[in-house]
Image (cartoon, rainbow, N blue to C red; front, side):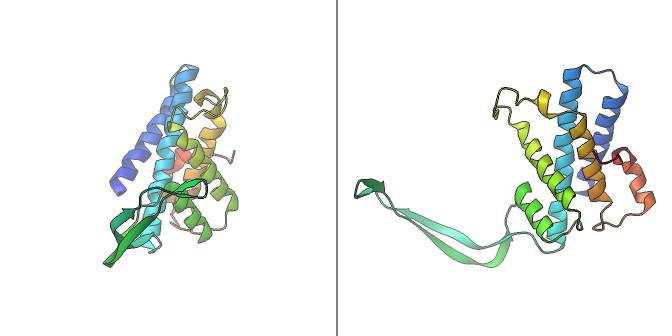
Length: 189
């Protein structure tokens, strides 16, 4: 995972360079900001996964589904109903259950693993929702397009959130360790 984090941080630095130093059209600039946000939230998601596992806080499953029995449909009054029974067997050893970004964020916030910075948790949740816009078909209204949702404010917010996570008490980095992440050190938007 360390290698993947390093590769993706270098890619973020490259996108940042592209955004600052190349004369991109406004559409290419906006899509580059979207890409920065997608990769940036993936980095945060990986860090949260690592932290939850390291602290033994990841979700575990103690049961294995053996069989599902479903009855035929039947009527109760005017409603159509059915019954489903699930038969589980307890596992000798629990297995790790996949956690999505939302559930990891909630657990990290509940346990205050990134400290007591409430605004940071809100920013991370906002960025998570924005990251989910990779699904191009999910438009809630006419102006709900990438053009309107990925701009300089979101870029600054992503950089600030990444730097806040890396510089949090969770990692307690030295000044030298933070130096390569200087491109993320921006004022709070």
